[in-house]
Image (cartoon, rainbow, N blue to C red; front, side, top):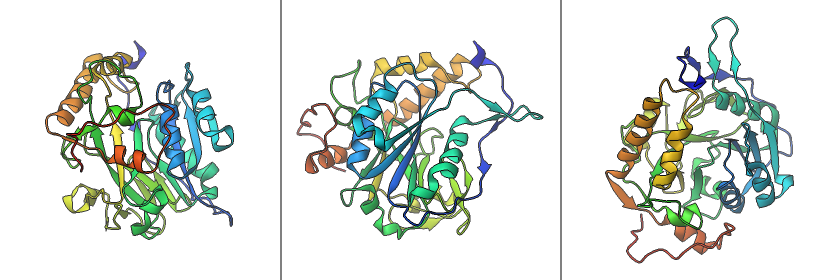
Length: 316
């Protein structure tokens, strides 16, 4: 298969000139890359609309299922921009492949960033959970509009599900890694919310701004460098928590392994990486019902009925 082919180094960082802000810019948008996310994208979109996302900029990498129609139906076509984003881009002389997600994020900033005060760059299996307030913007009050916020992954595994259960992801998966600051390379990482009119350097997990350079803030307002994020002093989920539903059921883990990766060398490498990550998540778990409590308190509709959580769930 073509994706087994050894590749030259991947370009994972690009520089951009920040767009000029419009005088009426407002609210928060999400930029996301998708491919065949039809099973879950409606729930993801409905939740984020409920917590204040104004617009969804969706880069569709050749979906052949209901992804595009599902997200439009879930939140309304006026709140969604769909951009076909298939294929690959290479540097002519070096033959280096440009990371398609980085390219998409740069495109989102340059073409849509002037309309919004903040832009979040997350995946379709990641949810931004307010722990203070009812919206993402309210939960970021402690950052005092700092233009670069980094949120650590809170990684959820299978929660004991062998096969895909009925109902929403947010109700079915309540067990996560106890340590978001684990040194496992695939468990400890960050996603960012930025002021797009400040961004001058783009990658998947970190950004640079023209005013503050590589400085970034956690959700509580503590600022540090990119590398400083790895220090435990940076960890916080007191205001806004990023939930990453990594694997879902064991059945879906097998499907994930079967799909492979555009960037892997061998199928065994893909298998080892996924199983190693899942093992790291599940070797030391806690019950986390913060999402269940939020959905119940704010009567968030997810398009599906959510079962009541069991009484032995632990609050964290």
